[in-house]
Amino acid sequence: MPDNQGRVIPSWPELVEKHARLTPNATAVVDGAQELSYRELMTAARGLAQRLGELGVAPGSPVAVAVGYGTLLPTAVLGVYGAGGTVLLMDAALPRPQLAARLAGAAATVVVTDKETAPLLAEAAAGLGDAAPVLMEWTPASHTEPWQPASPDALPRPLPRDPAYLVFTSGSTGTPNAVVVSHGAFAAMTAAHGEVLFGDVAAGCRRFSLNNPASADAVYADLAALAHGRTLVVARPRVRRNPEALAEWITVADVEVLDATPTQITALVTAGHVAALERLSVLILGGEAVPAALWSRLRELRGTRVLNLYGPSECTVDVTWAELSACGDEPVIGRPLPGNTVRILGPDLRETPAGTTGQIAVSGPQLADAYLGNEALTNERFVRVEGERTYLTGDSGHVDSDGVIHCVGRLDGQVQIDGFRVELGEVEAAVGRAPYVNQCCAFAVTEPDGSTTLHAAVVLDPAADAVGSPATITRELADTLARHMRPRLHVRASLPLAATGKTDARAVRDEILAERERAAEGSSDSAGPSPETVRDAVARFWRELLGVDSVAPDDDFFAIGGNSLRAVKFVLRVRRELGVEMAMTQFFGAPTLRRCSERIDALREAAGSDG
Image 1 (cartoon, rainbow, N blue to C red):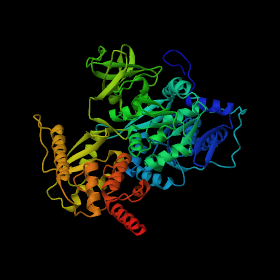
Image 2: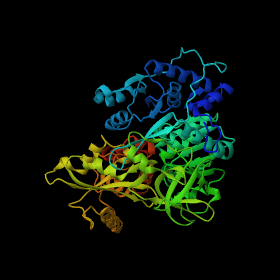
Image 3: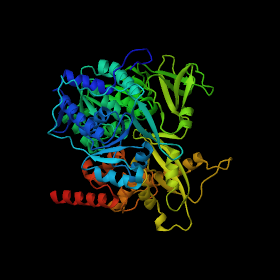
Image 4: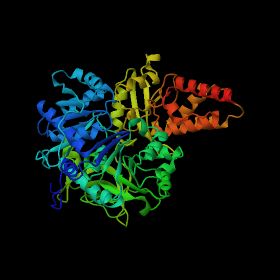
């Protein structure tokens, strides 16, 4: 596969097979006590490829993969490529309507599932009628003849223009867009990581994390480790979401290189697990902007090299990189990865001088092919600049006098939440469809800890009673929106209008933030012992941490805006203000207001009886 300099770049599956032939008994994937060698990886992938071929999968056929997060995931990707198919990785935990919409949008012909995920995907596909894909429950057969390094049977070699995978991104019109990434682009990203990461920064490391969510394109950067003969160490979802479990996993699993979001790492630091980060050889940040406070803290890590990688899905995960130790105190996205060209363009699509803010634009072999079935959006975002096909990222930035790129925000209504790209328009559309919602205005807030939270101000139908409460609407949204896209709701009598007659989103945001500040000041001004119950205290903590107006007894912390970082802050407040030692695992097991309060009461009673 030639890059933009004429070099031939092997595809990802070719490179994985190459290392399987060179070191067949080397460990490819580790998931707890389960290990998979490169030989076993190839054997299982070949068996899946044969089954997919029997089901009619041909070159270019979209194949959805919804298996448990573990050894099956990389095996399934390699198996789909062995059949010539195009991969659509899916998280079976997504709401059923989202799963169905993605299956339909991708026109998936087959869905690869396992015993646990098969019922969930069957339910999602049930309403697709004649367009429903074939569901294939897959378990690698133990009786399959082992793949041999000397075997003349090689995986099909994809052409550079063949589609490698689809990834859905949030859409401003309310409908997610499927980005089509070719094998040539995937190979170029893998090669760029090879030069910077595997051949330089992490040259001596073997154990790399498989930590990014299956439905995020960053998982393909994790998979690049297999193309360089390394070992993938699986961080299960329950580990990713719990800072205490993640810190223990880093130590016990002997992980050398961790790729994570800034939110995930902030939660680790806040929970006091800096020592776990200092056990790593390399820490890679990506998926969202790095807060200045975290940037400064990570520059102080001893013995751990820290990289910040940047890139939209349309550019195959990452296109720039910066090593924090070589940078100043201000977060930057650095310089282009090998093979990529990054320009700062003005409104006329001409390159701006150094120091002048404009739109970040990317050219090179990592560009995606298109938005599936959306020619208008493809032509709008992929343009020609100085004779090169170029993607307009929508991100605002500038280049300093040293040639380092700074990203300073967005030019539109797009935000990053926990490593996922979210269009405010899609959030507004979903909330607006909820029963009893007459008006909606979605907005984002950058919190003091540097994280970003989603909010939605709503005007309810006057006829709405309890069924139109924020808690009820939140439960409705749980059936249509992924967790990271569910906003905190604020009920308003009306929404302010701008001079254009449209809702004034800035005024809405300012009103709600002012109310939050007044509420926080009122809470801090109260003196003397509080008569509030444990449930009252927990509800107050949640309101302040999550920025919500009210909390119902059965509200789930994580469904109304909580994440791992805010969970850490909550547990610390319980310890500081209620005098109760509550472990993160105990909170994760009781995430509703009612159950959490009961758990704290029980812990308090147990501590009293022990005394």
